[in-house]
Length: 157
Image (cartoon, rainbow, N blue to C red):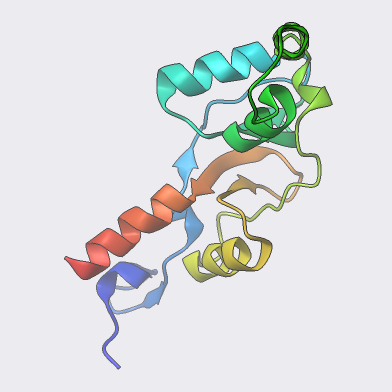
């Protein structure tokens, strides 16, 4: 089977090839928010920057959660036509702190892992992104299904 160069990165020597790691694929320094920021803040940033996932970090830079566009739709907007009273409560919901709606059990990866680890995790957990953290849990980046699709695009061109 032919080995494609985009799955590999150069090691120490010119002929030393190793599997492509997430360091090469991840978005470094992603937009983040704090647990006490509001759902409204996340909605605004997602709309302005075209994002679907925002890692939530504590003051020490450690990942504490993740909020996604889908979480907001499910938990805040309730995904249905709303009565006047429901609209009022939904308006109040956007004023909730992110710690009330974020996912806390976040699947993470490290930058040294191969891209195949992200593919396997996404398929196994049925997720669309994974924050990249160091050994201390500090956020280094994020890899998303869009990153994987860009890699796939390069493969088929």
